[in-house]
Amino acid sequence: MRLFDHPEFDGHERVLFGHDAASGLKAIIAIHDSTRGPAVGGCRLWNYEREADALTDVLRLSRGMSYKSALANLPFGGGKSVILGAPGIKSPALFRAMGRLVDSLGGHYRAAEDVGISVEDVEIMGEVTPHVAGTRAGGFGDPSPATARGVFMGLKAAANARLGRDDLTGLRVAVQGVGNVGYHLCRLLHGAGAKLLVTDINQEAVRRCVEEFSAEAVALDAIYDQEVDIYAPCALGATINDDTLPRLKARIVAGSANNQLAEERHGEALRQAGILYAPDYAINAGGIIVIAHETRPGGPVYDEMLAMRTVDGIYDTLLAIFERAEQDGVATSLAADRVAKDRLAPPLSAAAQ
Ligand code: NAD
View 1 (spheres, rainbow, N blue to C red):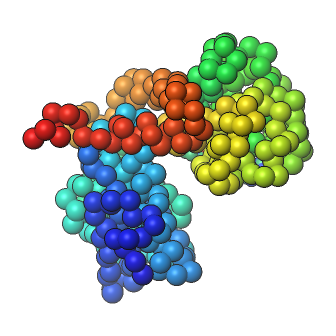
View 2: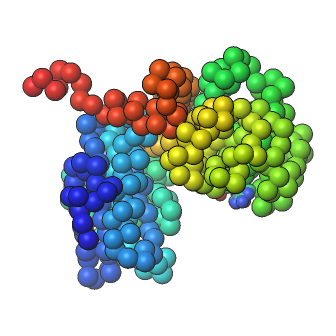
């Protein structure tokens, strides 16, 4: 298994492999970049087929967190951790062992929930280390409404850039997935006068949006074919692919789902098709923003006003990405990486020292 010349290594600052025989813990913590502050990122429990897959996953996710935090202007770096194993290995002893591993980094990394890890699991880690985030003691609870608010702001920025209007009245928006984030997004869009078309495998979730927001229900696969201004993917990843892209009639893609592009090249394909793409890790940062505010070093535990102001900053971040894409003549997905990398660079004064 390669590390320093691993394709996803990308100059990671630290990679820590941890093992605890008593609890069966096998874990990797990756810290990609701490220029902006201590690394914050989720801890994932996954039954990887090979250990090499776990390393690839943690490196890729940790770099993604650096970019996400930098784009959201948070004083945090990027990190991530993975615990290798099936859900059945979960135990308080395992999470205490993981907590001790996190603690050994002395605050350079703060762990939060991710796939396979619940709030309760993180709280057990919190029994042995203060370096956890996203716990109930933090004061904000479910991050989904904040994520939806950020997506709403990003969607307005996209409407401004592509349609020349901030006002969403009368715009048609196709929302794919009306779960935690999608539902709250529909609420905001309905309040702003948009016309909603929704789909979900959960018919109850669809019915709620039809009743509460006068949304039109659409069949699962038909969501790509709708005559809409905006397509908002809020369910799965990889829904922008060779099959769906030629079917889209929307002029904007802006939603909460992670990894919306099946492959990097689909960012350029959207540009060629004249569709403005709001890069996923920029527009869906509302959740990490509230988590970051919970853990602000030396600050109050949770300042809701400040957190929401930062979430609303997603509007300006997206405008900056769209401008950069225009200037450089590249896809917005690539422009987002470039803006994030600029924000990762040390301040001039620090670089001179
Ligand atoms: P969720 O599970 O509450 O909602 C997802 C919804 O999508 C569910 O209602 C589900 O039934 C539906 N769905 C699943 N497959 C579908 C399909 N093929 N077609 C239509 N609908 C389908 O999850 P969530 O927390 O709302 O997150 C939604 C997306 O946003 C995910 O990709 C998630 O990774 C991303 N995201 C969420 C947050 C957050 O704060 N919750 C933050 C950042 C990114």
